[in-house]
Image 1 (cartoon, rainbow, N blue to C red):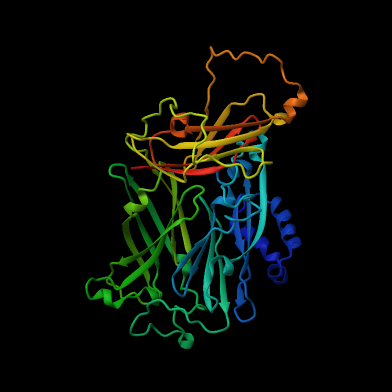
Image 2: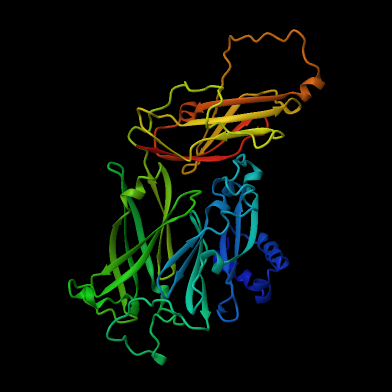
Length: 479
């Protein structure tokens, strides 16, 4: 199977005119070429140099190819993030290029639809995509001379690294701290932090790390070892006055979960405990152990997450770690005692008199505890007689966005011994077709679905026969 770097070479066939001019035919051609390759993953590519005085955009092409099952488990439109490392400022910018795309979200205010899980041959079929993204617009990039490294990440899949130089003009960006006195002589007297200068031997950088999770009390500590080569931006003589550390290396830790709106980023300064003066080009190594903030951990539901570390534009990972369920997470719900057909103040309202369909409403965030574990959903169904389903039970579907586990339940089970007498005179088909059936309903989704009492985020939808409601996301937080 080919690697992302090999696939990125295909994207070089895209001319500068096609890249900046928005030629969709050229993208279609590359997409066809990619579909014939033995490849699953991500690739990113653009031109090597862009003049900030002649161009006003930084277009790149993102190519992807995944199986239908992978796209169901981890939709690219919800999980793709672009990481950009600025070699001038050491800043890492993160953005999701397709999150609000109308192409992927028919209603930008709602999450994507819950699709049936593919199986058999349908699960192994592949979907290929080749799209253009303007990084300047996406990330509001400083449009001045600098060197950038671009990497695409989709949950646990990482693309190749794409390097681009923004040339021309004058830079007003703050340069990273530099050593005093000046570093060793370089041709032309250029500082190692100059955007046109590549760090010495960048391929020698590496990071090995793990995430240690302790359940009670919950803590996550990122432990590892890094090695790189010194550049002037790493040198901090002032630190040496208090410690032996003459060198401090900046790294960025990135944490992602499935379908997260935005990844978490944490900037860390790792001291290098060494007798070396850290002259540019000298090898450096350091061990580190950094806890993730407790206030962030409190927001995580039980399930799997992914961590990366970015060092001088290189991305290391993925490193998987699992947040365990709370000690009382296995306390299961009782039958839903809150089901009713009343119209409540927060019940959905039909958009118009002509509207037909199913709507649900649920809070975006629900704080619960063992004494009050209720998460109430309210809904409205308005169905014409011609479309009324034979099976009109309310089927609620929830997917845990961290674990992808699916929960289903019928909200209003009919009692087995209940006998409904037929009407004295059955209505004719013409009468039925003209009838409009309106129904309100309310339920405690945690009780109805037997959800565990634990921090979690669920995607919800409700179905009556073939009629499907809107999709909503609810975050359940344990107080």
